[in-house]
Length: 343
Image 1 (cartoon, rainbow, N blue to C red):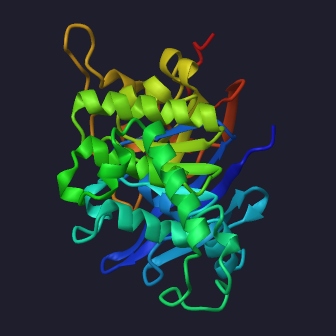
Image 2 (cartoon, rainbow, N blue to C red; image 1 turned 180 degrees about the horizontal axis):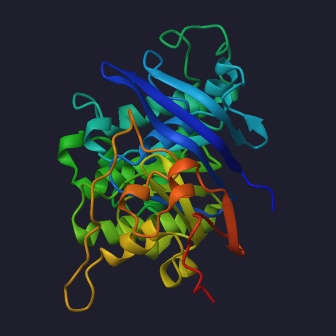
Image 3 (cartoon, rainbow, N blue to C red; image 1 turned 30 degrees about the vertical axis):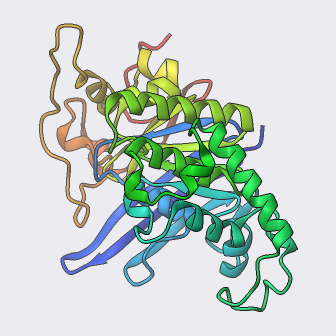
């Protein structure tokens, strides 16, 4: 099956006062329709930067892409016409669920007004809007017939994401909703344009445990029912286990391992992955830490960036980044000395 999204050897960084920070170092991943792919790793490993690179919302003043491709439905988003990407892909074919939904809403407008303002331009029916290619957004009109159809679609989707009394909810302000309700709203808004891919950037971080489970279950169900691909960035391995089909692991800006979720948890191969899983509390409540510290990205270590903390590291690990080692169907690792006890 052809991948919906393929990131191939993507490298990028940011200009800082201290120097150039190499945030992504030849990162690759792929995701198919209907698949939930977990992008996991510690805070600062580059997960959110990768998500923003796919969306094309990196800061122009400081970000610099130094190599690689981002192929979406066969088109390289890095070289495609920016106006065309903004018109047909960003916010339509690819949408985004943020980590903190409260800061994504304007506090002085009702949620209904804000949803309809987005749909005026990003609705699947927006092509029916006369003059939208040349009129400024502030003066282009919103045809009444299409607006009614959009309202009906909003109400239907709010019911789908299990928000009660959707008509009353649309008249409320963001502060009148709970964190779980706001996140369900963000998921609904991400699905309204009829996307092929939803990027969910740690969508349960600000929620309590019970609500987290509900939101994760909702994402999994909607991905399956609507055949939508979901790229879930998270540092929560439990969340990845619950809803993901496959997992990609990142460390200090490098991808180190990818595997189907069952194989990932049963037979991790990269030394970092094994230590990451060992850091989870066991049945007795004990956990193992990972010695050492995450390296800085302005002067990162050569080769595999995990080698300063890895007891298996030798000369080649320090000199050159390991190539991909295919261990099984859908399971690869970048390591010269992986664990090979996988069945």
